[in-house]
Each structure stands twice: as C-alpha cells, then as structure tokens.
Amino acid sequence: MNEQADRAAYGGSWYAATMLPVEPRPPLTVDLDIDVCVIGGGLAGLTTAREVARRGWSVVLLEAGRLAASASGRNTGFVLPGFAADAEKVVARVGFEHAKDLWTLAQAGLDYVRDTIAAEGADGIDPEAGWLYVSKVDDSDELFRTIGLLGDLGVEVEGWPTERVRTFLHSERYFGAIHFLRAISIHPLNYALKLAAAAERDGARIFEGTSALSIDPTGVRKRIATPAARVRASHVVLAGNVQLKGLLPRVAATLVPITTYVITTAPLDRERLAAAINYRGAVSDTDLADNHYRIVGGDRLMWSGRATAWQRNPLRYRAALTADIAKTYPQLGKVEVDYAWNGTLGNTVHRMPQIGELGPGVWLASGFGGHGLDTTAMAGNLVARGIVEGDETWRKFTPFELVWAGGLFGRAAAQLRVWIKRQTDAAAERRAKAREMAQRHVDLAQTDSDATGAAASASIVPRETRCDEPAEPQQRSQLSHRNSREDAGE
Image (cartoon, rainbow, N blue to C red):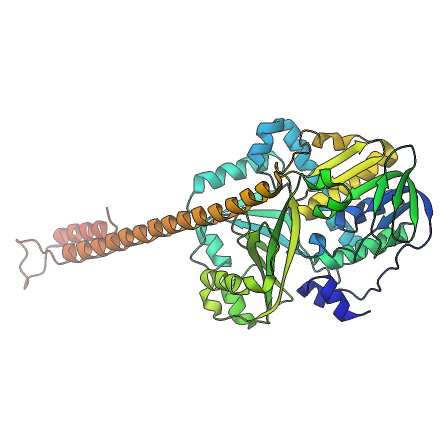
C-alpha cells in the first residue's frame, strides 16, 4: 500500500493517516453481465451492494477513484438520528404520522451502522456514544419545544440545563443542550473499508479506478460503459452526489455542492483537554457549518466548520478554525494543527435525501447533505429491498422530489445564507451573553444587599436592654428568634 498516494486520495486527512491497511482494488478490465450495477463507492453504494449480495443477487460496484474518498470518508463521523431537514418543516410537508415513519427509517439506518460495527469489529472505527446539540443562546422554550417534537417522533433525547452543559463543556458560550442518547461518532473511512470487505465476503465485486462513462437505460438490460470494459445489468443504482454531473446532469443539478473544512490538532495535554471538554461524544453548536467537533485518538481535537459553496484550499481555513477553538475554549491555549482537509457534499433544496426509482431499473440514492451516515445506510437498505424484494417503502420519500437547485444562482444563494446565518447567530449569542452578564450583576447586587441588611439587623439592640445588663430570658428568646428569621431572609 502506498501511504502517500492514500493520503492524497483522501485529502490529507487524519482519517487517511489512521486508515486500516488495505490494498487498492483493481479496475474493471473484462465485460460483465450481472443483476445489479452500483455506481459510486461511498457509504450508500457500499451498503446497497452489500445488501443486494446478501440477498443472493449478483452485484458489481464501480468507483471512479478510491472507496469513500469523497464525503463518506471525510466527514466528522457523526452518526445521528433523523435528517438534515428541520423536523417541524418535514411534519408540515407530509404530516406527523408520515414524518414519524421517516424518522423510524432513519433510526434503522443508525442501528444498521451500529450493528455492522458490532459484527465486523470496532477496531479502527472507535465508536463513541452520544451527541450534544448545544445552544449558544438562552432560549429554553425553543429547546423544550424541539425536545418535545423529537420525543414524539421516537427519538431518544434528554434536555440538559446550562449548569449540566458547562459541567461537561467548560465554555461560557454555551447554555442548554439536547442530548441524543443513541447517536454515535465513528471513524467513517475505516467503517467504509470494513463495510466493503463485508460486501465482498457476501459476494459483491468491487472495482476501484473505474469510471462509469455512460449509461444506456433503455431496454431490460442496461448498458454501462467504462474505460476498459462494459457492464450489462438489469438494475443500475446511482449512489453519489455532485460526482454524478458527468453521468446524469439532471440529477446533479438538483444538488447544491457545499464544502466544509476540518482540522485535527496535534496531540494536546490530556489533563488540559479534559479540563475544557469532559465529554467523549460528538458536539454541535449550530444548525449549519460552525462548529462540530469531538475528541479523537484520545488527545486530539477534531473541529469542522466554515462552509462554502465553492471548494477552496483547506489551508486557508486553519486560522479561522483554530480561532473558533480559542474563542470557545480559551483555556486550551494555542493549539497546533497536524491535519487540515475538506469534503464536499450535496444539499437538496428540501434538505431531504433523494431515494427511489427514476425509471424502470434505474435507481437513485443521493442528496444526503450533512446528515449522511445514518441516511446512506437507510437508503442502501431501501434500494436493495426495492430491487430484490419489490418492497416499496422507498416511496415514503416521493414527496421530496427532484428540485432544480438553481445552478450558479443557487450556489450563490446558499453561500449568502451561510454568511447571514453566521452573522445572525453571532448577534444572538452576543445578546444572550449580555443578558447573562446583566443577570449576574443583579444577582450579585442582591446578594450584597441581603448581606448588608443581615449585618444591620444583627447590630440592633432593644432600647430597654442595657448593654451592661443581660436581657431577661424571654427577651433573649425573642431576640434570638427574630435574628434567626432575618438571617434566613424571611
């Protein structure tokens, strides 16, 4: 294995530096006639191929580069319940019962990842339990409404008050939080590699370095051309995002490419790190790009944010991301960065995945946005069941149709939304901090006032009692009772 080549393929990430040893798979060089051809070697494609193979059908997976070299192997590794779309918006679109069914399917995707890790071994994947969605504003009513809706949808969550949040995340920026108990965080690249090995054991054939140049979807047998060979299949599954542009531009046009930037620090002093972050699960403090983070390798901090609609050099964002760390956890001091990379995902207009049959025998699993580790597993299972068993559960996603994303104007609008959201969030955070500081001043002034009043009350002596004469027993009892009531604030 060429480690330098692997690092280049996977964007110089910490994941590439810690990936499991695996030899590249050869490209396709002979014609094949099979049941199912999966195009795209990310998590959706790998899950689909594995589940088709487990059902006894012949399946081939074609990957233009290396497995999971795009968004699947470059993300922060959060495996979360639900979708990128806001739950309230999904309920408003399809109704509560339909939305609850969708959230159940997403949870099944999360459980699939968890079960696969248990079956294939956690070594190298290193799952950690829990996800904290933290608020930077003091809006407990909004937090409780969200907790109530998620609970009604079947998500296992609990609300954390500010005091508890700051016990685990020692940052004055944070207030309340929602704790997702069944979420996990993983090494997504190593998970993908183990998933690929499992798929091959089940009978799938995987070819890297094999681009699908064209698809002829007409007829019962679809024809897929590659640089050195052709594939004939009864079903074709397109499992990709913006990478589909050359193959199916109409589908790619429904996605807004969003690039996020990730850094991993050099090893930090463990005591100093624990004094700042005493939580081993995943943490997010925004709905969009800034910030998502977790501890990896025991003593490093992985931190992501700063989304852009056009891909840029990740080195440009090292300073901004380390500044975010310093603002959130100043007690860490200056941190050094060992790894910086980016990953590009595809966002749909409605923020829901696109899953289903585009035409007879042509299937799509795409548009997972920033919530892909559970939904790729879900989609792979739904498509495999649809192909082999005729199961139509995938139709629950038909309300989320292919919608043109607006081309360059859509990308510009997405970038503008990110900038506006960052500014409005920052303003809301400043207001929340000002309210907290004002309340602290009020509480401190009240404490000082109570202490002054108590001291003044203790110095009052009844006029009929001379300083050089002891009070009568009854007078002493009344004085003691009154002073004790005043000290207690009555």
